[in-house]
Amino acid sequence: MTAETPTETRATDDANDTNNVNDTNDTDDTTDATDANDANDVTWGIELTPEHPPEKVASLASLAEDEGFDVALASSHYFNRDPFVTLSQMAAATDDIRLGPGVVNPYETHPVKLAAQTATIDEISDGRAVFGVGAGDRSTLANLGIEREKPLRRVLETFTLAADLWDGETVTREGVVTARDASLNLDPPSEKIPTYVGAQGPHMLRMSAKHADGVLINAAHPRDLEWAAGQLEQGLDERPDEYGPFESLAFASVSVAGDEDAAREAARPPVAFIVGGAAEPVLERHGIDREAAGAVSDALERGELTEAFGRVTPAMIDAFCIAGTTDTVADRFEAALEHVDGIVVGSPLGPDLEDAIERASEALSIATADR
Image (cartoon, rainbow, N blue to C red; front, side):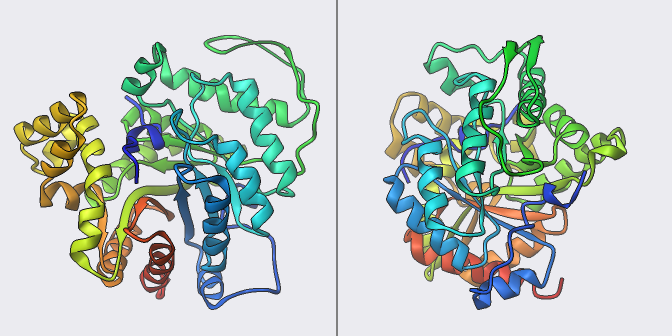
């Protein structure tokens, strides 16, 4: 795990069955893990970070497919390899798993370009693309000289514009997003590419439930997921019937290993960044001391990563990461699934990536066995 911000990874914020990432193509070459997942309606997702070469990430995607995962998301950070280049190799290495960015933002890249890139992945994967989009991390965008203006409106306009482009329309927009006579010179094979909004704050959660196909909730703890579910309900109350079903996924930081201590130690870097960007109400929800959280944040701002990781407390790990052995993680998955439709297993995954993917699959099988 490199020093990448989970808040940027998940891009948090202040009408048919194809909308669900669990609807993959049928295949005769199934595994026990796949059979176990097919027995329930819970979506299994996984985040793969292009901190590794694309061929490595593609190999991990192939393993995830063999282990029964429904969707693999490539995270997007300016300091890592390009997610869409990586997704193209993931598509070549897999047959059925859905693929998409998890997540991109419409500040670093124009929404029309994001639509074209996602349509290209849909084309080369033979209709397996999903579109993960969010507002991006404010501090990271500031490093690039980008001001994150009107994030709610920009995200909404981005995915509605993209949907029109995927439908073959020529689009003109004069809102927060500007486009004049824009169109795509390709026809994605999917009847509809589903959009999943990366969200954490109340406004983005409610907007996603009202307008998108799904949400990627940047949270791991049942306490946060229960709160988020309440926000989603408010959005769903205003959702037009013609938009079809909506899916909520917990985009959770996960670290799983055979040794509990090793798993928790691997969780320190992502938890440090989550704590550093956590809003005060979130810290209060978990009883985390503001001074302790501030010490982590201050160390990150100074670039003292070792100090920041060392200041992460057990309570912080418990609040912001699902970390431990397979059985421990299975229990946490089961608790999370009381509030969401599925789980995206997010970075760091664990100290050993291949082992972690297999263990995460086993934990999901245990957690969903009675569903």
